[in-house]
Length: 326
Image (tube, rainbow, N blue to C red; front, side, top):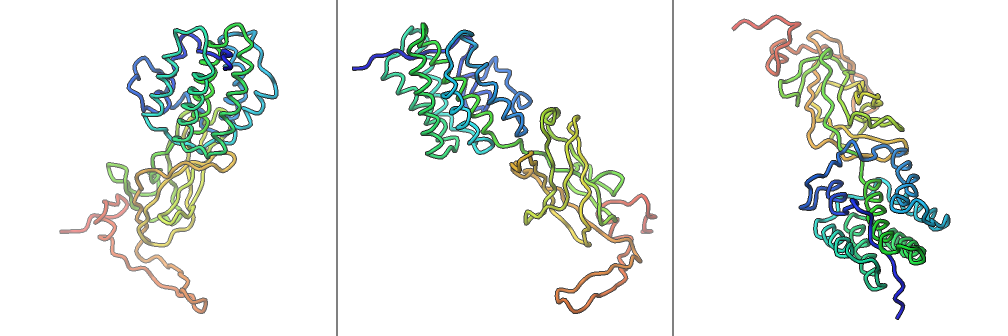
């Protein structure tokens, strides 16, 4: 039986802490300093993280052999999962990290143990949402890298490190974009409730403002979208270096809107919409002439809006209007 030796990991690269920091699914979260700000957000940041993989892999041995063709194929297969994964289950993460810890005292790694590690590596990717082809390709890349490691002076150390670092990096670039909080009505354009979850405006093209992960645009850029309940994009705005943005909405007829916000990166990857909506009521000023188009393409109807002042004030007091006498 082939007993060629493969590899454990470098000191301090405890896979359990690294992976639990990325997805919060493990019990060993103490002394873990991984935060959202440490994770790549934009498409360019994720490409850079993959491009730096050889540097990460040389941490245990700066002079190790990294075959160019193998690393290039591994990087190509890692790019295929960008922004397409989600949090794996706690059970598969724990099983993978347990395997890493069990190998730590050993100087060598049998072929059977290497295959077990490769299997648990694939199980995490599968539970994170990778397709069968993506999982098979990444597993083949890692076995090829382990074969090269088997010819080194410290095969066990390199293989354990490689699996931990490649899985950590793949999961970090595979994360969807951070879900934003909902944009809110700009103070200049109307009145907001104290909880900033709803507002009223006379402006039919109001501005919505908000913040996203500070520093997310240091490399690449993120565009924010405000969408309605049907997913129609009502306006967009680019996040600046400070993490702030403003979005002027398209012309909105009178009515009440449930608005959510989502992020978009350079190549069109979208975050999930904000978990909560901002309720916006658009009310024309009394006496305003409003032109609306009928559902049939025949007539255009012009009408004068006679909304009493009190209707606006019933939602929030408009400081520009006098209080109604009781």
